[in-house]
Each structure stands twice: as C-alpha cells, then as structure tokens.
Image 1: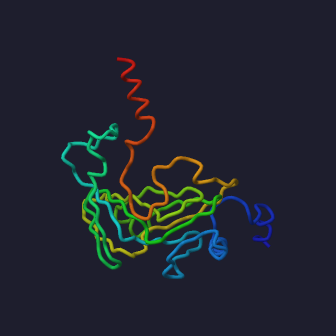
Image 2: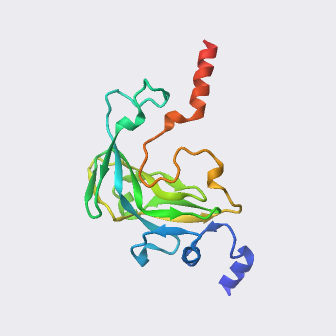
Image 3: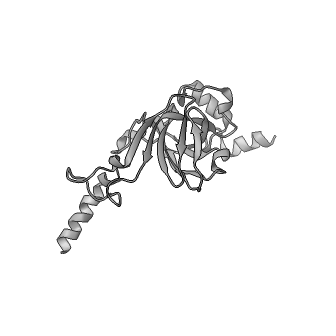
Amino acid sequence: MGKTLLKKIIGDNSPGILAKPKILELIRKKELIITPMLEENQIGEISVDLRIGTDFLAMQQGRKAFIDTTNNDITSRSIKSNFTESRRRIGETFLLHPTQTILFSTLEYLKLPNNVYANLTLRSSYSRLGLIISSFLQPGYIGCASVEVVNSGNTAIQIISGARFLQAKFIKINDNSNYFNSHRKYTCQVRPVSSKANEDEEITTLKKMIEYNK
C-alpha cells in the first residue's frame, strides 16, 4: 500500500537516486553499461561497487619547489612531470604513502545515460583508514572512472588491484544532457590523466588583465 502510494506521488520516472531494481533494468536495456561486472553482489540496494584498476599515477616532488598551474607554454615544466606512471596486474599491490595523492582508473568501463550522473564515494572500510577521494561522473559519461585518492593519515596503506574500492550512486535528473556538447579536458579516459589545470582558458585571460593593468 505504502509503495503503491509512493509511486503514485513521485512516479517511476522521477529524478533521484536509483535503487537496485532500476539499476538492473538500465543494465538489462544496455542504457547503463558497467563492464566487467565480476560479481553479482557488486550491485547494492542504491549503489554499485567499482574496483581498483591497473593503471596509477603517483604524485611526487618535482625539481621545482611548487607545481605551476599558471603556465602552459613550451618553456614551462609540465604538470605531468610531477606524476610517476605505474601499472599493476590484477592481484598486485600498490602502496599509498602518508599525505600522498594518487590517480587511478577503475577496472570497470562505464557508459551512463544522458539523464543520469554518478557520485563516487569510498567504501566505508577504506574511508575509515583516512583515505579521501573526490570524483563524480557527468550524465552521458563514457570511459573508466578516473579517481583521485589522498592518504590523509600518517601511516602508509597498501591496496590491491581488483579490490572493490568505490561505491557509485546513480542519480537521475529531469532533463537529458549531452556530454559532448561542451569542450572537456578529460574525455573517454581508460587510464588516469594528470591535472590539466594550466589549460583552463581563464588563466590566459587573467594574465592578460595583469599585463594590461601594469
């Protein structure tokens, strides 16, 4: 009775967090693609577990005392030079040092509907160790999810490639959104990509303003 009334009030196609039956329906219709799905229990009541992939970028101290996000010319040292690439096979481990930032891609390749975005959070078991992430996927996103992880604690933490690490909650919005309508710096990734903060268009504009006001 309560569920029937709720459906009458909000409707099956209402925006909000998708529950397991709707997630399974979208997967069955191939409107939502998550592959490979190694275990049925990856799909929870309101989320899907995603696994640590095989490619990593680890931030390291470069030759300069800081990372310059204000320069994008051939004479400046690229932000990418502050990251070390590393690859692991499934079942191999990776060590996160205290205060270190790493980027990795999920094992799963995803394709989202144009009216659904994904909010990515850590599984509780890992957030309790002091790990922090910040990531979400736009409606219509295609590719492996790229994740930024920071070890905020004072102890190194070893993780293993292939382990369930993230939870993706899928949220439906009212209108469709074309992912490819806008210029994007990170599109259809299958491996992690270092920051392109120095490629933001407003940086050139801001530097011109400073020169003009001198």
